[in-house]
Every structure is written in structure tokens, then in C-alpha cells.
Amino acid sequence: MRKFAAIIIIMLGLLPQAQADWGQQYILGKAGLMDFDINDTDVDPMLSFGLLYGFGLTREMSLEFEYNQGLIGGDYTADQDEGKYGIWTMAGYGSYRLPLNDTMYVKIKGGLLYESINRDSTAEVNQDDTATGLGAAGGIGVGVLAGQVLTLELELTAIDEDVLFLSFGAHYAF
Image (cartoon, rainbow, N blue to C red; front, side, top):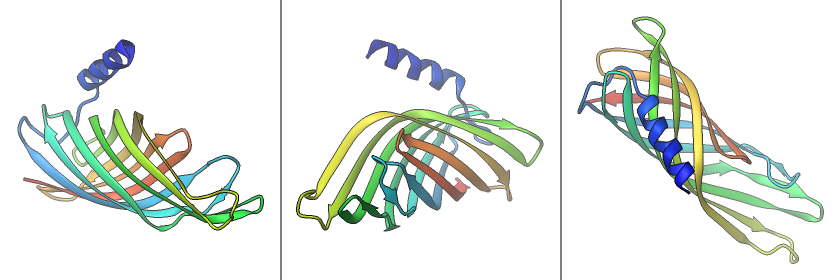
């Protein structure tokens, strides 16, 4: 656990955000597809929506707090079983936006994530169940400044070893 805490502290020191000065705050709304790879089960991608709050530490570094909710999709079929997966997540990230030019940047983020994945099964043998857990998560993306206070981001986040989230979002700085 100490190694993990040390890694997070180092990441927070090394993984900053662009376009945010100390104390600048922003909110981001995003939508995208979550892709599941669970126990060799054929799971349809899930349309998910998220909200993010960010706080600028430096021009390049920020802290971000994110909530995502899977809403549409997640149907699965497996040996003599079918049903639907659902997911919601809450996470805290340190993020870094490396400027490529005056309007574009690459984003890297890492942090801690709590997830809840539930499965509703139609088979009598495999009853409904829920898995929850706390773990590391990270992502990479690209962004474009679309105005003084508006930024667009395309991002791929590894929720855990079984779930990837490809999202598109717009954030508003205030």
C-alpha cells in the first residue's frame, strides 16, 4: 500500500494540466462508449455519460474528480446465460496537458477509481450480482481549445483491466 501511495504522490507531481492557472476551476460533460472484456463474455458496448470537476494547480497541472454512469447497452451472451451489465464509477485524477501548439494538447491522467459493476442475468444458475472495488485508473487523450473558456477533449480511460471508456467531452472554465 505504501508503494501505491508513493506512486500516486509522484504522479500528482508529474501529471499536470494545461490551460488552467492556480485556482481556475472547470466542469466537463462527456459521453462515450464503455467496452467490456469480462470472462470471455460477448458484451455489447455501453453508452455512458459523465461529469467532471477540475481545479487548476499550475498552468499544466490539475486535479480532476469524475463520475460516470453507464446508461444504454451492456447486453451480454455467454454459455447458457444472457443478461445486461451496468456500471458507475467515481474517480480522482492528477492530470497533465502537454501543449502541442496554441490550441491543441495531449492529456495524460492517473489516479484512484471506485467502480460498481452489476450483472442482471436471465439464467437461473447465474443469479444477479454486483462487483465493487477501488483501484488505479488512467487515461490518455487529445484536446482542442474552442474559445476562451471552452475546450473539447477525446479521451481513452482504462477503468480497470476489463473496462475501457472512449469518451468525447466539452469543458467550461470559470
